[in-house]
Image (tube, rainbow, N blue to C red; front, side, top):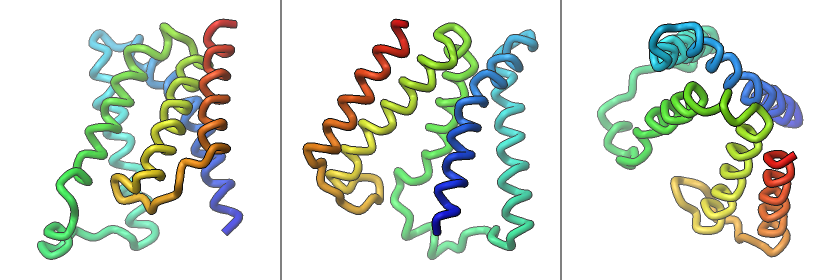
Length: 147
């Protein structure tokens, strides 16, 4: 299971690189949001290729669809919002502040999600040390954004 942490580290590196790539694509096109369509196409092809290569791709059954909470279908909308933000904001604020804010907002939000068991996560109490970690990340964002 340790290799999963390596995969997450690689995803984190990709998460830092992607806004710059998307921003450069947006700058090079006459309409910046057109870049979002190409990003979405790349996402579709990547997921399709991975699904076909691993045999882990199947159309959902009506029973599966019926058991999925309504809010679970909107993850793609949130992902699209992240891409639009990358296309329109990342180059203006800089790579470090952009990613620092993105990651810190995610960590602070995840503490609440874990604490309350929202959106399908198991409950993990927001201990004093977890809250302190979130506050330290907020302090880190301030340092990265100001200096």
